[in-house]
Structures are given as structure tokens and as C-alpha cells.
Image (cartoon, rainbow, N blue to C red; front, side, top):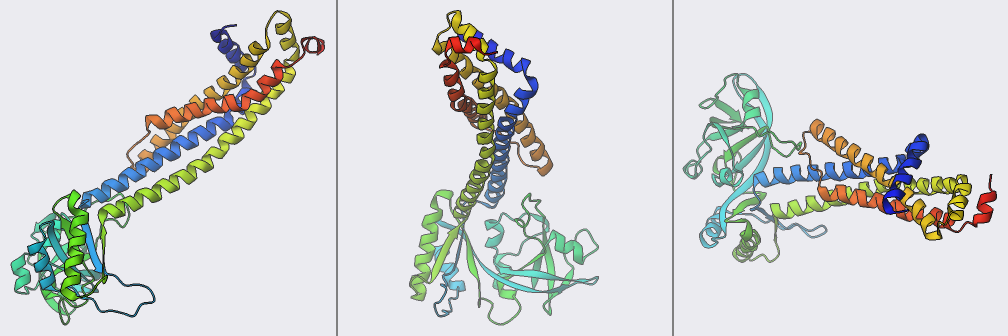
Length: 395
């Protein structure tokens, strides 16, 4: 028989034993569908996370005190002069803003709300690409004179005021009065917690309390370009260490590093889940081998007749091997369709970008064919070694 006839015989065997063929390929179908769905959903989730993080800017970095566990506490403060000097002598640094965090109550004429307070400078708007819904963000002049102004997140503004535009309204923030000069537009994020809300932003010079620059948690910066991020971080670190005579007292971290970490973690998780899904492929392959062995036993007399009519051992070997491959290939195709459909449905429900890579589909199909070869080889070899006379005597 030629190759086309071998395939025809293989398909004929599937048609004659539909239920057995279905049960045999079920493990292959489930395994292939699971692998494709998991990889597609994982890639879609990864792409969504990366897109969200890139929207903040890949040229962002942060500088913070390098505290080590077990070491004595070393007070490390950032100063206003630090920021001015860095922006002056480090061209790689485009924007740089202090980040002083606090928690407090903000009150308006209609209610009150516990909020997170950030004391910073005008550069923060450019670093985080803040989109203003109403009014404006505070300027360098506001910070220079310690103007009592505040910028609210849209959600916080809606909780505190029953007017659409609260610019010009007054609030009491930790006992100090401030005028609302702007509202930041809420950004819808597919990742919970990625977009901050319920925040109030103040010029750092008007933060409640004592020294305004005391206990500044970190410096938040933006490099002139993505390619200059690491150079900018190291330059800032060196300048701070020289100004404060404090070697290794500062640590730096970039958004690019954060993205690499996320990519690595999602990749590992996807690999683990794919390996678990691949176990069903192994089980399915064993099922194929068992069924092919049963088929050899049932068709012993048929094999004897073929040999008596002139079929050689290699013909019998190829016939049963192709039947196993056809069985797995059909299961692989069904699994690909189910996996692709499942990935699309999950993507629609979770509002993820549907990502089913062609290489995943090709790899899944080739793997299913490989299973057919691997687990079909032994039954095919056993069939080809049958003695024709013995085989013809089998009832």
C-alpha cells in the first residue's frame, strides 16, 4: 500500500470503532486543549500587565534608603537641595520628585474621608503622566511659597463633594485648610490595585507637620529616555552618596526591572501549569498504546491474511504506526479547536486580549503526532512480528 492508502485504512478504522476512538483520543484532546488555553491565557494576561505597566512609562525609576535587615537604623534623608543638584548636573534625569507619604482625614462641607496623602512636587505630574479632569496640578511656584492647595483623585472628589467640578472648594486636611485646585481623572485599569485612588496630592512644602522634607520615603524619577534609565539611576545614587558621604546607603529600582520580574514570574507560572496539563497528554498517549495493542490482538487474523497476500513486515509496521498517528492527529486537531475556542471565551469574559500564537498551535499538533509515533511504535512493531501461519489460525 502507498502512504495515501495507509491513511485511508487508518481513518476507516476510526469510523468502524467510533466510541473506542473517541475515548482513546479524549486524553489527547483534553491535554492539547488545556495546553493551548493555558499558554494563550497566560500570554494574554502577561501582555495586559505589560501594557498597564508600560502606560506608566518604561523610563521610570525610584531611589530609596537601602535598609538591611539586622543592621542598625541609619537615618537617611533626601533634601530639596539633593533634587536641585541632581536635576542640574545629571542630564539623564528628566524629572525628579520627592515622595512623602501620610495618612489622614480630609473633610469637606458635606462629609469626611480617610485618605492617603502624597507630598511631592510639580515634576510628579510629568513622571506619572497625570491626566487632569478639572483645574490643574500644582506648580513649582505653588511649592516654592508653600501654597495651601490640594489635588484630589476623581473618586475622592466625588466622595467629598456633590458638585461636578469642585475646583475652588475648600477642604480641611489633617487640621489645615486647603483649596482644591485640580481633580485627577480616574484611569480604568484591568489590574486591581494598579491604579491608585482615594489620594490627595499636596505640594511637599505645605505638608502638615514639622520639617516638610523630613521622612521623605523616596525619590521618584523619569529618565530622558528608556535607554538611559540605568545610567540615570546610577548617576542619582552616586550623587546622593557623595553629597551625604554615605556609601551604599541608597538603592535604586526601575519600572523596567519590575516588568522583567513580572515577565519571569508569569512565565514560570505558565510553564508549571502547562506541565500539569501535559500530564494528560502522557495519560492519553498511554491510552493510545493500550488501544492499539487491543487492536493488534483483535486483528491478528487480518494481519495474517495481509502477510499471506504478500505484505511485508515493514508494511504491517507502517500501517499500525500510521493508524496511531492518525488517531492522535485527529485528537490534536479537535484539541486545538477546543483550546482556541476556550481561550477566546476566557479572554472575552476577563476582557483580555485574545492571544493564540501560531507556534503554540503548531507545537501542539506536532506533539500530538509525536505521541502517536512514540506510543504507537510498540504495538506496530508487535503486529509486524506476528507469524503469518499462527495469525491465520487465530479465530
